Image (tube, rainbow, N blue to C red; front, side, top):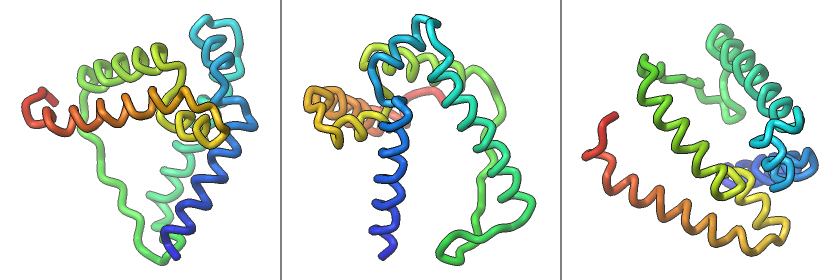
Length: 137
């Protein structure tokens, strides 16, 4: 039952990403060219809503849909590792034309060439898992 609810939420999120054109390669291209506010508006709205929702969960002690207590582990302080990770993520996003969420959306929408990018991303995550202990964090 729990897995089905996760799949349903993921499908809903995918539909929202597709309908808002957040998975559109052309919108991403516009964003990296600074030609349109569309993607910045979507990401900024998601950031503000995420911050407000996280603070609300922390302060209210709200439980999950399944009745479990939600615990948010504090993040490590610092800027350098977040900046390096953000730059690498942005470069990969610019090269591939999609970040991980839209990759699945594009597969679901029938854009099969994105499978090459998705498989490459999974391989990259696998390689990171192998090298994680040897990398500075």
